[in-house]
Length: 252
Image (tube, rainbow, N blue to C red; front, side):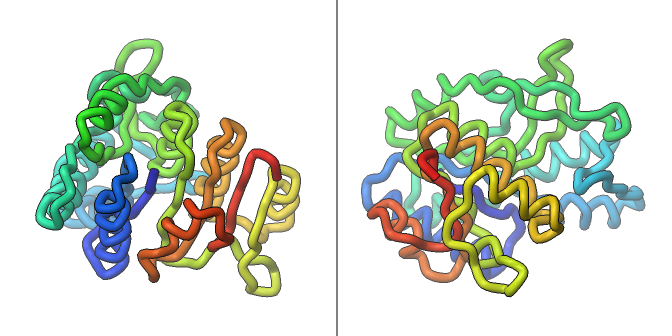
């Protein structure tokens, strides 16, 4: 399973090359994409103010609708189209389709933002059995009233990987892994070390949800890793048990 960005550019192209390589190698695969910068770009075009709280986008009904349109429409459509052009049998979905993701409201101050609480992976399993590659945009239905909520793409990827019992979850990013205070990539992390690195400010910002999602997946027995986009062989090497980027394992 791969988590990639949702914007168009060299990094996304490299991540898509990895998807192609895995598909050509016969590996069942689910892709979750983000696209937060693209949402911000369209908000600016439309004159909508964007605010963040603890790294999450404050989401009123208008911003929720914009995020759903951009992530579930524009970003998802682009990624699916590029994969199909590369010969990958991709199928675009959001976390709403088939009731895939159910969420609890994160915080009243954040508005329509959810924290994934339940994954119904039945639709994904049907698509995988049919040889398709599901490509998922982050969104969820509120558990209490079914309202559409914005959810963090990293958190969605971790929850889906855990639900599917995925062998491997890889976050394909613009950095080679989690760096320590000395700037070097930390090869392996466990929950205790992560807490220490969060407390001392080493892990912060956009890396936080990725690390938290890796821990969730690892706790379910999934090998999880954060790697750079360069080098499409990184995922294959991880599948072979090699050390690439920062790896989280249940046994760690």
